[in-house]
Length: 449
Image 1: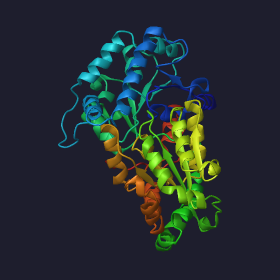
Image 2 (image 1 turned 90 degrees about the vertical axis):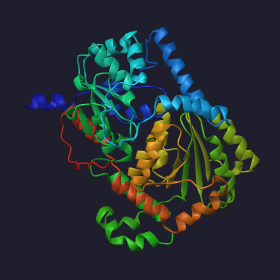
Image 3 (image 1 turned 90 degrees about the horizontal axis):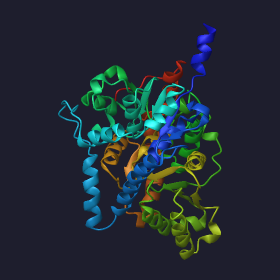
Image 4 (image 1 turned 30 degrees about the horizontal axis):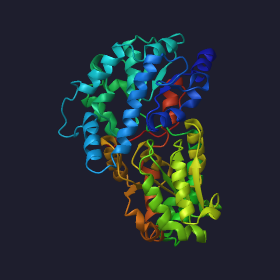
């Protein structure tokens, strides 16, 4: 009995992501403690990937990033983006109906797989058939198509998903899904995925942002954040009894030790950098006065760094770099995700497009929603608003006016609290429990769609 328990709690998995945007790798990063050897396999650039396979992936990635940037080009850019977006369109959910018939995109994916895309990777994993967790559908499909001998799991990275995420023949597929919310659970059923193959877990977020099943790190960070987001005490006074019941009697005594901090995260393809410029221009006086700290996250996009540096120089904010304004850049994605977690501990407001980061409102982060890019982000925006954890940005040129109205009224504090209460946070722990067989005491997630 003790031997079987030891085996289950030390079980590892192959964690497979894809280098295309940040979402798939962000989910995988949160599960890195489960990854065999501590290494996440990147399907389009893992060690030993055949040259032909790498070139095929490279073309797909270049197309994705080019079109994402091209969207901002007047007229032509919008038209090109719309063509690509229609291929990944998520159909309206209602009326409920059978959506199991595979789309052209699904058939194209299987055509490439049957041509050999992904076979080398799956053969590598099959030598040690651990559970395989894919954060991108192609890897999960390839595992099943090439008869991978272990269990196959697929993590959905958005608040809704297109038919592309369900296999060719979902009724007979053995792929199991980790769903971030109730809408995805119900959507997968419409696509024909068997209910027993769907687990409602929540989106996986790094453990260092949570701190354990009871979420002590979330509660600590939120306690400090609410003090910055509600300087006049409007929200805290009205909901003090509720706040105490969740955060403890001494929650307001935690020293937050940082100025009001806004973090703007540029998209995975480097899109929307111009919003960061407009924010900086509008908030420059607050930055000089030390009334606000601005983090400009460039991710791994080195071309965005000189763009922001030129903005800082033009506004004569160079003396404040590293103090009340930071340009945060990393050389690789692993370092980026690590740095991102560190920054979030002292972030009061997250401004980003509604990507997978929409789920981070569950950490008690109010999200200012930049314009969505793509069908899936439209649905993320809808979900984020449905849990009342985010609000659509006003004109970035006047951030210095409306942002502080929202802070002074306690409005952003309400968003932070709503996100904490309504959005799931423990996806990583639930997924780990399913993979290892070790039970974790967590509340059941309601099937909110």
